[in-house]
Length: 621
Image: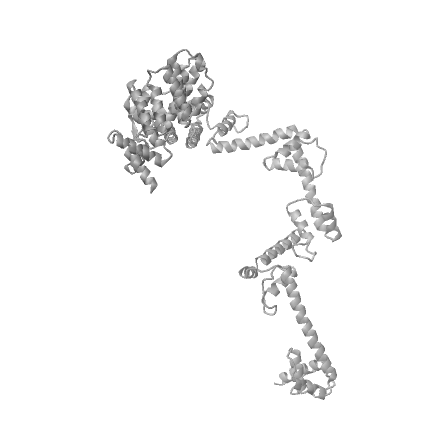
């Protein structure tokens, strides 16, 4: 107890001295003054009663000292808060809103500011609180501190990463040359040991430069500056890096042909090693670019195919694995070509046969067959085999070759089986009864007539026989090219054609083309001239009948059709012309008119017209 009393007495005496109250005689620890001074020293605000007591006790100097202490404490409080704010801004921690009094961050930032490193647990705390930028700066501070230690610069106080010293030390770490200003900065800041390390690095690099020049035959280059482009180029060569075009051009301009040759040989050696690994030929001893194997593998990279001499070379050296890889690579190339819809050429097919890869040939043919069936609208034809006669015929059409009579007969005999769901559509287009679609129709028919038309045009140019013009004109019409048919006979001088039969044939064909493009007056004029030149031929009469039906002059049309039958025309051909009029009628009322006329005339013969009548009714709904 006596020791405690003594301590309290000494404390009271110290407080009286601090707050200028030594004149106060009462030194008892039970004194009111002791209580007041203890509260002040702890930063506790005094009550009015306590302040009044000090005044009444004539402790004015003590009151003034207390006010100064409170003012100083308030100012320090603000200083601490301001310093914390500055540190948060500097170390990218502004999103932390905790008061500086209770925040752990203040201590960590001040630790960084003083150049001390954070512990692992402190780093984890930064991460856990989302202070990633602060942590990144902390890591940079750590690296900066390590570099300062490594390069003898620990006397430099600033440890923040934006320091110029940090940038210099990072250059030294990768042995990058410093600028004159950076070197002078080290000298001016008394970092002489650091500057000496830089000088040592430069000496090592200069020695290395000289060694590289000797190694790669560039000793005639007198510039020893480490900033010379040659130094970087030689370093790239030594590091087995690929030289850029600009680097090779620089060497060429400076006359370093030996250096270029060495670099190219080294690169070829590396490429050869990579190719041997790729094509499983690493057991082959010769690794120089002059090796014939290197040339083979280079060609293989470009063409995917080996020549006969290359194959013999590989077989003699038991490098058959390369042949197998090359063959598979070539097969993959051909498959890709097939997938693109391209055709295999003769040499490719021959190679596949020689290598027993008929499966690829069949694949190519089946793909091609499918593509041709799609192109000619016969994809639904059931026979999908590449041996189908249809494939042979489509290939001929694609090559613009004429079909044989047996080809045409086969196309006429064979049909595409149409699902019953589409029966009414096809019946409307082609057939009075459902039997499927003839192959000799649509795009195949048009392609056939186009080829025939071109053939007869060429025959006319070769022989000047105008019967070829008549045939060409007829085929152009059947190929849905009436304007092309007309063009053939536009400049014909009919008066100079002596053979009436030929005149009639040309005029009939020309009239038919005019009918196709709905120029019926010109069509009639041609038909009547044809009748004058050959009154016994049924063709111009048939044309006249069709023209009349197009004009809805049915009785006149019937007359001309009867005249045509008298001269040998087949009644079924007349029905075909009438059906064409019905099918192509653009005015629904006119179509109905002709259908009703036909059914009234002969409902059995013209029963097919009922389907067109039904179609008209459906469209009208």
